Image: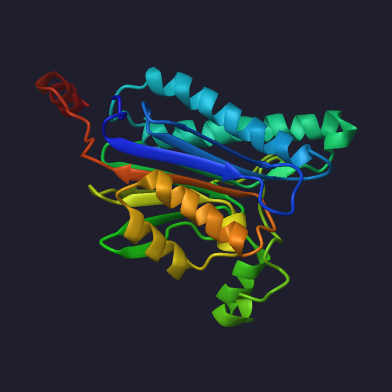
Length: 274
């Protein structure tokens, strides 16, 4: 199903004020409802290598496999929907590629990347992430973070060692507990969410959220929601005005109309036989 007319997608990335290189990579494919954002880390230029491998691999894998997928297909063994398995497999291949390059190329040793990926299908969003890049949803004026950071800071918050107010000034903001490409395998956290018309979803790197509060993000998206390009530019400008200490990347997606999979009587008959 082509989702080009069902989703509005805007993406923007900026090097920030203090970095020489942009180690963030972003991509989208409205036709298959795919958005991907990665924030690389490592030695000189290695971070941008890791994030680019991640994004290119995932987009290429899903572009190919989604075209071969039967709508509404589920895996006979696990019972999981096929799209979820395709995302997991694509991320695993990206992890393997990054890890192998880091092992083979001394200048890339230890490189890795965070990841947040969204796939819109059948009036749902499959949201996967690794690390502290985030996904948010604005619905009916309320902004909600729908991913939970894989970071030392988040673990401290969950255990009650620090308060949310203390977290704002923590020195542990950028210490992730999970990253793509660091180890031979990695666990992708993947969840399914129902979507509604007029929802706005945002993927972003920590170059935004370290400097711009959720309240400011919510107000900006809500006020300027009729123009997503203006929203993206304004959010990046706000982060740069606050110091721009890191690369800043934003992907915004607005749900324009439903995209449920339409089944024919033929599909329903054979599903009943199963």
